[in-house]
Length: 388
Image (cartoon, rainbow, N blue to C red; front, side, top):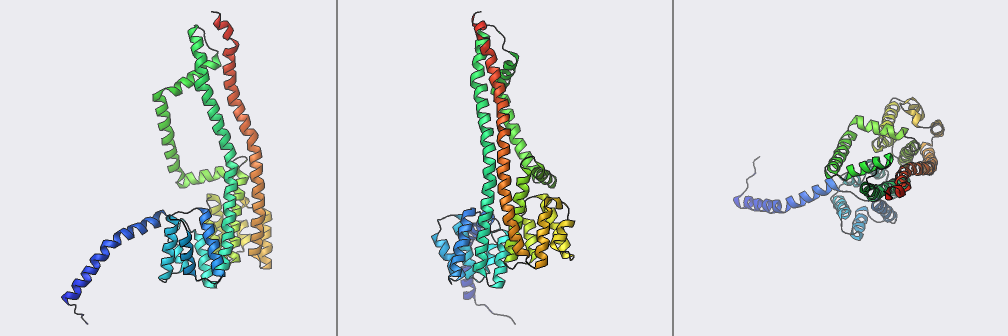
């Protein structure tokens, strides 16, 4: 059946379309930009999750709670994201679907848990558990970063001390000896030649260019499967730090598993989130194999035992998971395992820090001691040189 449209109504519709097209591109472009580049600090996400959990537990409607939180925020990218989520909720979109628009802020685990709470009607409790997980994960990250600060400070100190000695002290000895027509000691001469080479503009420019190209090449190689596999292998086999890296990955994985299983998410969905959230090739391979074997009917503990790289998970942890399967309390056992691994991670961080300190001191001593000897050798001979 044909529908007749009068010229006047067609003209009105065209004018409305033109007016909408004038205002829409900027808004669409802005929203697309927010979607593609939106990021948020971990503290902001934890605060949002905690506030929303308290509001929902107090009887506040979800869309009103989101809008209220957005109004309290400072102007910025994260506030625009929350305002957009609130608008989507008012338009009838589900909370999990609105959050999934921003994958750089709300991880797959976050969205999966919110989706599970929508089905179970336990949104407030789920968000409370999720806030606890985010806080624990952020604390773990801070501990690892803190353990890496000391070696970096020591390294920068060694570079600064070495540079000041080579570029400011050694050249003065070189000029004194040249003015007297005397030869510098061999070790001192090597360091002087090296510092002279570094001070050459062409050599310095070439060295800087080579370093920049090397960084870009390494970054590109690290994005390849072989590069990722090699770097991840080095992490889990590096002396001193390997235990810390393994404990960090396991702590996060068990924390995710405990949080999701305890809040009603299926085991397979939880393992899939664990796999996608894991930033190590060997652990991803392990969890992928575990996922496939569970789908074939294996228990979680048996699937881990038969999976490749199962040596990354201690037999004691597997036994605890097996006990949880027999008692029907896998989530509770995973929670205990995550607490145990978190304590173990703290101990491994302290161990790594205590071991790296003497190594860094020894390395600095060798470098600075060599330069000090190179400086003292001409000092011992300066009286002979000055009498010439």
